[in-house]
Image 1 (cartoon, one colour):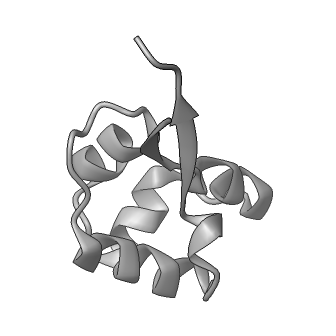
Image 2 (tube, helix red, strand yellow):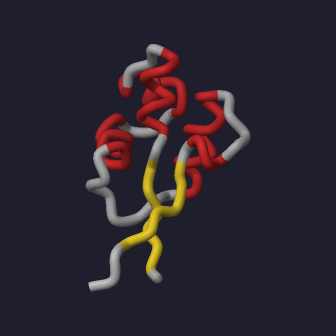
Length: 74
């Protein structure tokens, strides 16, 4: 069974009425990088970015930011 890391903070942004632009400013992470993360277009995740996003969103539960999902065997 294989797993993939999935970024899930998009829902949290929606709940808080925050835009990617606002998060970008608050977290000091490029908007393009945030957009790529939310849209699953980024192949790697910068742990510093995850920490900044968590701080900006005031969460200490990393599962609100990223999670593991099963990937079907090919």
